[in-house]
Length: 128
Image (cartoon, rainbow, N blue to C red; front, side):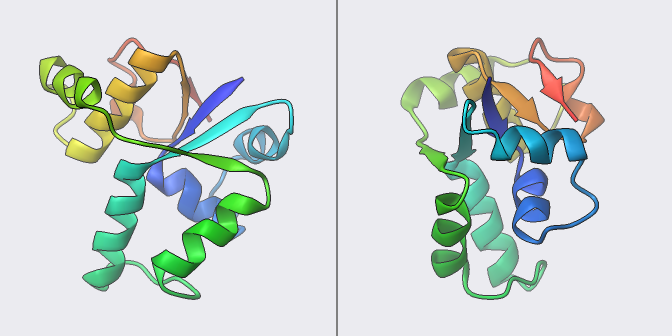
């Protein structure tokens, strides 16, 4: 499976939170899967951390690479086509970070690991 982690899924994974579904946790840890964290999620985490909206054991610049190493979570860069595709999406979800994840998943055939029901109206597969 090719899995794209929603920002919340990544944050719950790094915190070993019970909020993360056991199914998603198992898929992240399965070495047969390709697991990705979008640069959009990294930006969202950095913004929220900088604004005091989330707490992490260390600064995102130190924490995110360490968490990504263990189960081999690859970085998914933002491409021009991602941005253009996100802007073409029907405005069913107003969150710009999530809309970009939807575009990235659509263009690359990725399953999104997310508990957010706002992904459901879009033609992407969601795992939770």
